[in-house]
Image (cartoon, rainbow, N blue to C red):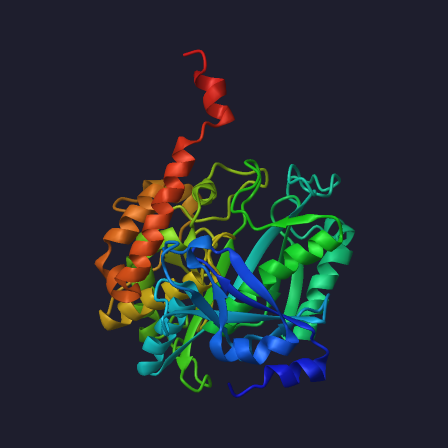
Length: 435
C-alpha cells in the first residue's frame, strides 16, 4: 500500500481503473472501478466468482478477490483516463495457488532465496487480419518471403507506430519493429526486465495490440497457427539469471565457447530435461501443435522446433545461444500464458541447478534437415493430450509448481481436449462422410 492510487488518479487524470487478472487459459479478466473507489479495492481487492473464469472452482466457492499491484500500473496511452492494474488472486485471505501470477511470484521467491533474479524478454509475434478473421488484412502482402518487407511494413505504419509510440510513452524501451516471416505477421521488441515485469507487460501488450488494431478497423491475433500455409506465431523468450541486485549476469562466462557459465548450463539442463512436460504450458492449445514440427510453409521454413535440442546461434534448435550470457527459448507460442511461461522456465531452471543437470554438448547442425537422422533424439509432444499427460505425471513439475496448480491446469485442459475431440470438423466430413 506504499502507493496512493487515488492520489495518482487525481494527479494523472485517471477516472477509471481496470483491476485485472489472467486465468489459467490466459484470458484477461477485469473489473472497471471508478477512481473514487480505488483505495478500497487496493486494500481489499475486487471481488470475482472464480467459477466464471477458467479457474478450477465451483459456484459454491466463496468470493475470490483480485488485489491489484500498484507497481504494475499502466495508464492506457490511447485512453489515458483509464489505467490498468495486474492483480494477485486471494480466497479466504490466502493466495490462490492455482492462479498464474501467484505461481510466478512463488518461483521468483524460490529463486531469490538462492540469490537469483531471472531477467527475461519476449518476442510476441501476431497477425493483423481482417475484422471477421478470415484472412490477413493486407491483400497486397503476397511475397513468398515477406520477412522484413519494407513496403508491407509501411502499409501498416499507422498501427505499428501507434503501438510503438505507446511503448515508448510507457518506458518499455522498444527498439525495433518488423514484418515477420508470414504474410500479415509482425513483431515488436522491447527491453528485457525482471521476469514479473516482463510478464505483466506481456499481458498488457497483447491487450494493447488488439485494442489499437480494433481502432484501425482491423483485428490482431496471437493464435499459434491461424493459417496452414504460413509460419505460426511464436513467443520466443530470452533468459538470463542475475544476482539479486540485478547488477551481475550470473549466466555470463567470458572464456566459455558460447559465453555461458556453469550455472547457465545447469539451468539450461533443467529446461531441456523438463521441456516435454512444459510444452503443456508453453504450447497450451490444440492449435499450438499445428505450429510445432509443421509442414514447410510458404517461406520455406517453419521457424519452430521439432525436438528437444540446443545449439549456438542456430534458429533450428529449441534453444539457441545468440550471444554470451543468455539463451533464447523458441518453443513458446502466442497462446502461452505470460505468467505460466515465466514460471515454467524459472521452475525448470531451478530444478536444473539443484540437480546439476547436464544439457550435453550443443548440436551444430540444421535440425530441419539433419535432425531426422539423429538417434535417441527426444521429440516434443505431438498434440495437447500427450503434453498434458506428460505434464501431470512429472514429479519435477509437481514438486516445482505444486499439486494445486498442476491438478487444476490439467483438469481444465483435459476438458478442453474433450470438447475439441467431440467437435466434427469440415475435414472429417469431407473425407469420411461417404466411407
